[in-house]
Length: 153
Image (cartoon, rainbow, N blue to C red; front, side, top):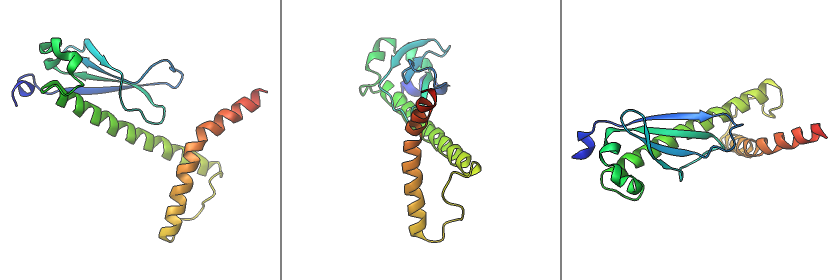
């Protein structure tokens, strides 16, 4: 374990920003054990336009401050901590995107805008519905933007 165990566990906090915060780029901020940002990694996974900042707090970052520029390039101690944080962010974003998709489908069903009213009966129907959902959910933000633009005309 070495230095990783010596500095205790790392914690991750993800702050999601409102869609209006268009200038915020997704990033991973490496912080000391007091939460002070020491280094920012901007090349990070995104999903569905969710804007976020992920804060990784760990005492090892201040102890290895001179190596922070190497944190995302395979550094023997920092690399595994950063990689674990990236994986946790990826899982969080997948979960949030799934929640957002389900909320959209539920809203469409409540508005009677969803074309399927009965449960699927066959694997083919299940596949058809998944395909429809994927295409409709992918197109929904663009359709909503075009509808807003048309209503302003």
